[in-house]
Length: 262
Image 1: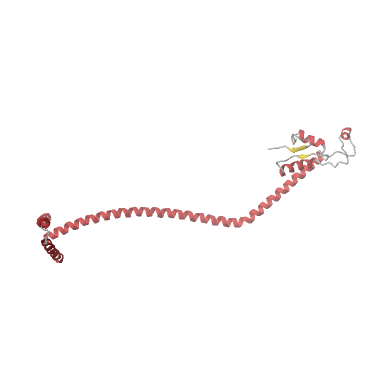
Image 2 (image 1 turned 90 degrees about the horizontal axis):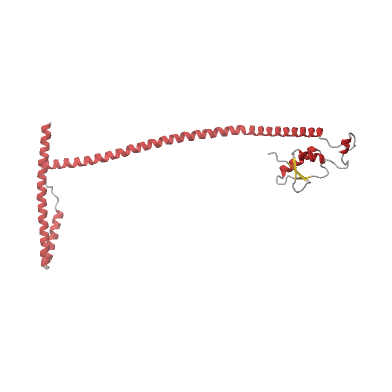
């Protein structure tokens, strides 16, 4: 095998040498023709007569002959042609290997990108499905519980109204019991008779006074003052002022308001 390889290398070297010699011969012939053309151009410059025209005709005719001729190989030796073909195929093979390597690297990179994108798509799809399922579940629960929530809210509001009404009734009863209006008949002790008020004036109870102050504060918080008149029994008004439940207007002593408790 080694002898065959050495003989093949020696035959390739000999074929290359023969091909180089033929190339040098053809190059020498080409250089000779080029010199003749230069010389012909020089002579044509010296004698610009019918010779130039004849020369042009001759060159044109020669050009036509060269165009009609079929190109011939520099050599017909099978060994030379085999060596040149092997070298050209080897060079082409190396170039194709480089292209294949680059293409394979790009393909691997694209596969990695595709795999990453597919993973990302699967994750997003899973998240989307989870969100859609949750939305559908919430919609079903909302459809079922909307009516019950509304009924529960109404029930709580009614309970709160009932509780508020009961508190107001208890407060009214407590105030009516412990803070009654003055006795217009004048019966009782001397102190009570001194505190008796004009029977023709329709006094309002302490509960109603507090209710008026509260409503005024809630309805018109920018102007929470209530004007006191003869229907406000002065002892109750004074009690509210002294105990910090109400406060008097700084410019009008006939107006009072509910104190801010927050």
